[in-house]
Image 1: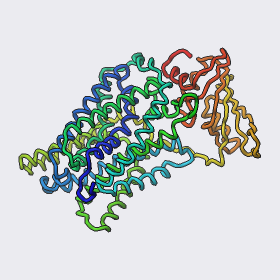
Image 2: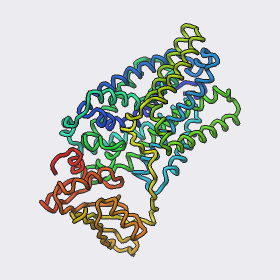
Image 3: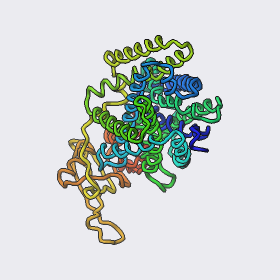
Image 4: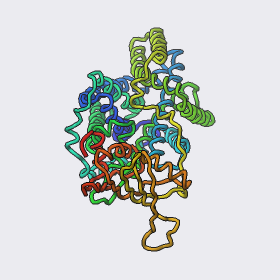
Length: 528
């Protein structure tokens, strides 16, 4: 394809759009439906995906209506409000990109890079995505055409090799949790919010050389397939209770799944490595449109103007990310995303289409102003309760100090039994400092009594000024009943860095279980 013709192929458009839409949603939707809709989660999923089809069809139709490009349509038909729309869209997309980048950085820090601050992950990632956003639509399409296979094919292989971890019975369960019918509409609306990147079709569709409406239909079909398949896969491995217990619970599937025979005990590293590509696609997509709207607003043509634009975008994203540490910013941000952002993304293109058809610029300007006022009103008087249910105020949490690799001790086995106050833990720790090239590494034992595993690890760190690392733990030995170990299992379900496919030896009955099955049973309130 000639990069100078301003067009992309249908295959390039499909692959880029697919990565932009499914990356975040496939990991968030299982939690959204189960936590908000309870026993009506399947109905919420169906209704939500029906909303997605209507929303996606609308975006594809509007994209066909502006063959010259949505930004050009705004400049040509919206009069003096074109500048206002440029500013609003630039802020919207920059805020979306920042929110996803911060969320991704927190996930990466929690599961892979515990020694790094979230900022040390966010800033390099922001720089990389800005570089991706600096490319033309053709350049981005060619890049993601190449990267598509590197993300999708390994994920398919991981699913295939992890099929032995799937519990079909878990898919048939989950109707015991209670919820009001209103939760169906909350869950369905949250699903629509999760798939809001479909709005990017306004900009990529007009660039496709081969005009084919079936392409849009197939895109929606494959998006729905990916969401439903990921939903079933995650729930079948984690169970309903575990999936619905926390915002990032779906990411535990990376530590819970494993290859048959234990060839690979933890899949969090390979899955996260491939997932990065999809996050890069959606964040760079939003930043790319932020760039174009700023170019349109300031009529940037010179290289120096482009450099200034990206500096402003970088500074703006950092400012938004910094603001997420404050409760008031999180509160109003939730209200905006719940009540205003999606509505703006639907109403503004409809106004542009109406003005282009009816040639009534004054009425269009009036509708834009009314929409902005309504959005401001919804942010001021709205309720962020729904957002609290699936955001859980993670952005305002105080970051814990993380030790470097040189200041860690690696736990190989954990033994636990009940004590008078809590649990009696015994950690079998690898004596790496005393390793002298022999065939085996010596081990040291550390005994501590604590109410939880987190408290035991904190006590060890205070006494030894070193952090315990459970990432290489191969076994847990528990001398207690299923009821006694229940609180510990709930804690292990959300403690990152521990493989959930390791065996658990229950010494009371001599039985051997897999940790993920015990955690799933604990969250499902089943007998152990």
